[in-house]
Amino acid sequence: MSSRARVASIVALLLFGSAACGPRGESQGGQTQIGASGQAAVSDDESVKTIARIAAESPDHTTLVAALKAASYVDPLANPGPFTVFAPVNAAFDKLPAGTVESLLKPENASQLRTVLLHHVTTSAYAPEDLANGMQIGMVDGGPVTVVRDGQTLRIGDATVVASVRASNGWVHVVDGVLLPAK
Image (tube, rainbow, N blue to C red; front, side, top):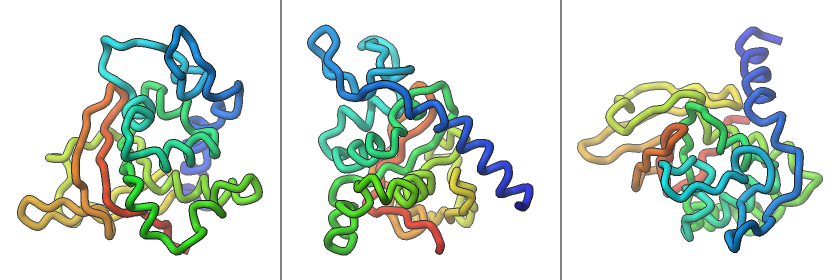
Protein backbone atom coordinates (compact mmCIF):
# COMPACT_ATOMS: atom_id res chain seq x y z
CA MET A 1 0.00 0.00 0.00
CA SER A 2 1.43 3.39 -0.97
CA SER A 3 1.91 6.04 1.69
CA ARG A 4 -0.83 8.17 0.08
CA ALA A 5 -3.26 5.24 0.21
CA ARG A 6 -2.24 4.54 3.81
CA VAL A 7 -2.86 8.17 4.81
CA ALA A 8 -6.25 8.18 3.04
CA SER A 9 -7.21 4.97 4.87
CA ILE A 10 -6.18 6.40 8.23
CA VAL A 11 -8.07 9.65 7.59
CA ALA A 12 -11.17 7.75 6.51
CA LEU A 13 -11.04 5.60 9.64
CA LEU A 14 -10.53 8.59 11.91
CA LEU A 15 -13.29 10.62 10.27
CA PHE A 16 -15.83 7.95 9.67
CA GLY A 17 -14.96 5.01 11.90
CA SER A 18 -17.05 6.14 14.86
CA ALA A 19 -20.18 6.80 12.81
CA ALA A 20 -21.59 3.28 12.95
CA CYS A 21 -22.80 3.59 16.57
CA GLY A 22 -26.30 4.38 17.72
CA PRO A 23 -29.77 4.69 16.23
CA ARG A 24 -30.71 7.36 13.71
CA GLY A 25 -33.58 9.76 13.37
CA GLU A 26 -34.73 9.88 17.01
CA SER A 27 -36.84 12.76 18.18
CA GLN A 28 -35.62 14.87 21.07
CA GLY A 29 -37.54 17.80 22.45
CA GLY A 30 -39.82 17.90 19.41
CA GLN A 31 -36.90 18.17 16.98
CA THR A 32 -35.99 15.29 14.71
CA GLN A 33 -32.31 14.59 15.11
CA ILE A 34 -30.30 13.75 12.00
CA GLY A 35 -28.17 11.31 13.96
CA ALA A 36 -28.95 10.33 17.53
CA SER A 37 -25.37 9.71 18.57
CA GLY A 38 -22.23 11.79 18.65
CA GLN A 39 -22.07 15.45 17.67
CA ALA A 40 -25.05 15.18 15.30
CA ALA A 41 -27.33 14.64 18.33
CA VAL A 42 -26.42 18.01 19.83
CA SER A 43 -29.31 20.44 19.59
CA ASP A 44 -28.07 24.02 19.37
CA ASP A 45 -30.05 26.61 17.46
CA GLU A 46 -27.76 29.55 18.28
CA SER A 47 -24.32 28.47 17.07
CA VAL A 48 -23.16 28.30 13.46
CA LYS A 49 -24.49 25.02 12.08
CA THR A 50 -22.32 22.03 11.28
CA ILE A 51 -22.05 20.63 7.77
CA ALA A 52 -24.31 17.75 8.80
CA ARG A 53 -27.00 20.08 10.08
CA ILE A 54 -26.83 22.38 7.04
CA ALA A 55 -27.41 19.37 4.76
CA ALA A 56 -30.14 17.91 6.97
CA GLU A 57 -32.10 21.15 7.04
CA SER A 58 -31.88 21.72 3.28
CA PRO A 59 -34.86 20.55 1.22
CA ASP A 60 -32.48 20.38 -1.76
CA HIS A 61 -30.24 17.76 -0.13
CA THR A 62 -32.62 14.99 0.97
CA THR A 63 -30.98 12.45 -1.33
CA LEU A 64 -27.52 13.34 -0.02
CA VAL A 65 -28.74 13.06 3.59
CA ALA A 66 -30.31 9.66 2.85
CA ALA A 67 -26.98 8.52 1.41
CA LEU A 68 -25.07 9.89 4.41
CA LYS A 69 -27.42 8.02 6.76
CA ALA A 70 -27.11 4.80 4.75
CA ALA A 71 -23.31 5.06 4.93
CA SER A 72 -23.35 6.08 8.65
CA TYR A 73 -21.56 9.34 7.78
CA VAL A 74 -23.88 11.87 9.46
CA ASP A 75 -22.04 12.02 12.79
CA PRO A 76 -18.56 12.49 11.29
CA LEU A 77 -19.75 15.55 9.37
CA ALA A 78 -20.92 17.01 12.68
CA ASN A 79 -17.44 16.63 14.19
CA PRO A 80 -15.04 19.61 14.45
CA GLY A 81 -13.32 19.11 11.09
CA PRO A 82 -12.17 21.08 9.22
CA PHE A 83 -13.98 19.74 6.18
CA THR A 84 -15.07 20.99 2.81
CA VAL A 85 -18.03 19.11 1.37
CA PHE A 86 -19.16 19.45 -2.22
CA ALA A 87 -22.84 18.71 -1.64
CA PRO A 88 -24.85 17.60 -4.67
CA VAL A 89 -28.46 18.78 -4.80
CA ASN A 90 -31.28 16.29 -5.36
CA ALA A 91 -31.43 17.20 -9.06
CA ALA A 92 -27.76 16.20 -9.39
CA PHE A 93 -28.58 12.68 -8.23
CA ASP A 94 -31.54 12.65 -10.64
CA LYS A 95 -29.06 13.10 -13.54
CA LEU A 96 -27.44 9.73 -12.77
CA PRO A 97 -28.63 6.71 -14.77
CA ALA A 98 -32.00 5.35 -13.62
CA GLY A 99 -31.70 3.09 -10.59
CA THR A 100 -28.19 4.24 -9.61
CA VAL A 101 -29.17 5.96 -6.35
CA GLU A 102 -31.51 3.16 -5.33
CA SER A 103 -28.78 0.61 -6.00
CA LEU A 104 -26.16 2.56 -4.03
CA LEU A 105 -28.50 2.83 -1.03
CA LYS A 106 -28.80 -0.97 -0.72
CA PRO A 107 -26.83 -2.41 2.21
CA GLU A 108 -24.86 -4.73 -0.09
CA ASN A 109 -23.53 -1.68 -1.98
CA ALA A 110 -22.44 0.26 1.12
CA SER A 111 -18.77 0.12 0.10
CA GLN A 112 -19.49 1.74 -3.28
CA LEU A 113 -21.70 4.37 -1.63
CA ARG A 114 -18.98 5.24 0.88
CA THR A 115 -16.44 5.66 -1.92
CA VAL A 116 -18.75 8.04 -3.81
CA LEU A 117 -19.48 10.05 -0.66
CA LEU A 118 -15.80 10.25 0.34
CA HIS A 119 -15.08 11.70 -3.10
CA HIS A 120 -17.14 14.76 -2.07
CA VAL A 121 -15.16 15.52 1.12
CA THR A 122 -11.73 16.96 1.82
CA THR A 123 -10.12 17.52 5.21
CA SER A 124 -9.45 21.22 4.77
CA ALA A 125 -11.78 24.19 4.94
CA TYR A 126 -11.76 25.88 1.52
CA ALA A 127 -13.67 29.15 1.24
CA PRO A 128 -14.80 29.99 -2.30
CA GLU A 129 -11.95 32.49 -2.71
CA ASP A 130 -9.42 29.75 -1.77
CA LEU A 131 -10.41 27.66 -4.79
CA ALA A 132 -8.04 28.71 -7.57
CA ASN A 133 -8.22 27.78 -11.25
CA GLY A 134 -6.35 24.53 -11.93
CA MET A 135 -6.07 23.64 -8.24
CA GLN A 136 -6.06 19.91 -7.48
CA ILE A 137 -7.86 18.95 -4.26
CA GLY A 138 -7.22 15.57 -2.68
CA MET A 139 -10.47 14.04 -1.52
CA VAL A 140 -10.86 11.65 1.42
CA ASP A 141 -11.23 8.69 -0.97
CA GLY A 142 -7.71 9.45 -2.23
CA GLY A 143 -8.75 10.76 -5.62
CA PRO A 144 -8.28 14.31 -6.80
CA VAL A 145 -10.77 16.83 -8.14
CA THR A 146 -9.81 19.82 -10.26
CA VAL A 147 -11.04 23.36 -9.70
CA VAL A 148 -11.95 25.42 -12.76
CA ARG A 149 -12.66 29.15 -12.52
CA ASP A 150 -14.13 30.92 -15.52
CA GLY A 151 -15.11 34.45 -14.57
CA GLN A 152 -17.71 34.14 -11.82
CA THR A 153 -18.30 30.44 -12.53
CA LEU A 154 -16.64 27.96 -10.18
CA ARG A 155 -16.56 24.29 -11.16
CA ILE A 156 -15.35 21.24 -9.30
CA GLY A 157 -14.77 18.50 -11.84
CA ASP A 158 -17.92 18.48 -13.98
CA ALA A 159 -20.11 20.09 -11.29
CA THR A 160 -20.81 23.81 -10.93
CA VAL A 161 -20.80 25.39 -7.47
CA VAL A 162 -24.19 27.11 -7.14
CA ALA A 163 -23.81 28.30 -3.52
CA SER A 164 -21.35 28.20 -0.65
CA VAL A 165 -22.24 28.09 3.04
CA ARG A 166 -19.84 28.53 5.95
CA ALA A 167 -20.31 25.88 8.63
CA SER A 168 -18.88 25.69 12.12
CA ASN A 169 -16.64 22.83 10.96
CA GLY A 170 -15.77 23.97 7.44
CA TRP A 171 -17.56 24.77 4.19
CA VAL A 172 -20.46 23.34 2.19
CA HIS A 173 -20.23 24.08 -1.52
CA VAL A 174 -23.57 23.21 -3.12
CA VAL A 175 -22.98 21.59 -6.51
CA ASP A 176 -25.24 20.69 -9.42
CA GLY A 177 -23.54 17.37 -10.18
CA VAL A 178 -22.38 14.21 -8.44
CA LEU A 179 -18.59 13.87 -8.34
CA LEU A 180 -17.73 10.35 -9.43
CA PRO A 181 -14.34 8.93 -8.48
CA ALA A 182 -12.09 7.59 -11.22
CA LYS A 183 -12.36 3.83 -11.53
